Length: 255
Image 1: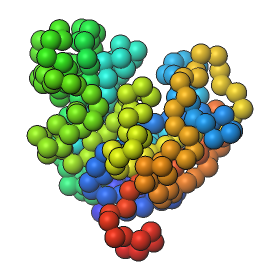
Image 2 (image 1 turned 180 degrees about the vertical axis):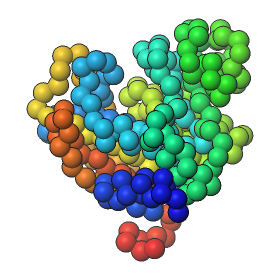
Image 3 (image 1 turned 90 degrees about the vertical axis):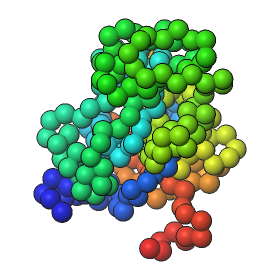
């Protein structure tokens, strides 16, 4: 294994994460705030949002693992400078790790789920050459990116299309709580959750989003907690959790 891939593996081991599967299925990555009583709240992205270098690393890792990244038109409107590429030394290490460990060299597809269009013209994601827009049959969307029109566009329909029609093995969900909450409804809709939890008693003004998940939500859909690590960051106390659905017949702790 190259020194770059070894550096990534070392950082993963420090978080208690080992033996990541090549195919993660439906992977959900999100950061939340804990109210201390088992309820999690989404974190709104902005200048006052608590920052965590560890969460930044895991976000980059998730994107590196993915064959397709699903986001929404709302996120593009809220984050006009959003890019999914990972730059700098970390980006180079992750790209090498992706190729050597996961056997993937092609960059992931970026999928924008939107019901009515109204996407920001000139957004770097739309100009990336990797964008696919999933939308309704009558929606008005910008020319340029590939467009797939569906009778009933939604997150689960999009995941099904990517897996069955495009053969995407690892589909990363980067969407807000109103969209991604469907993953935690009855049924096996999510295979892995990478959850970053901020534990300080208070949030800066304007950062707390909608109630989203509880401490028991992953259990309720058949996920098992594989790893947990607490880290004191400059912004305060965080914990980082990996939940996964084990293959049928496998017992936790067996190879």
